[in-house]
Image (tube, rainbow, N blue to C red; front, side, top):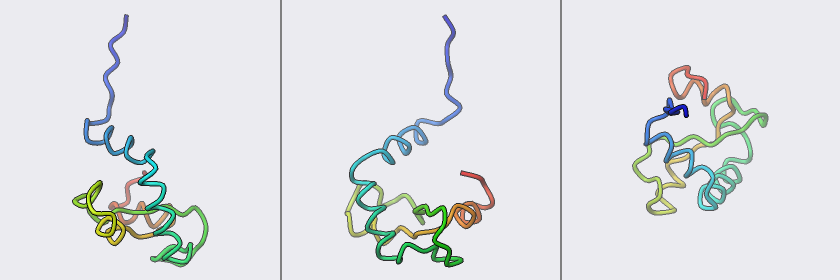
Length: 86
């Protein structure tokens, strides 16, 4: 039997699980709607994602988390994370 060690930290695993919750799906939909389904950095409507500015409000107040989010395209999301591909 092989022991599988995840390359992800417990925090990353928990965050990925959070992204599959109904709460996140609702917040993501509302944020994209507020932002007009456009990237707030470059204005495109292609490959949209929703970016957390910080993770301090995740799972807490719906309103605080909503205002801690921004709609961005995949390219700008990578830039927001210092050029990392997500």
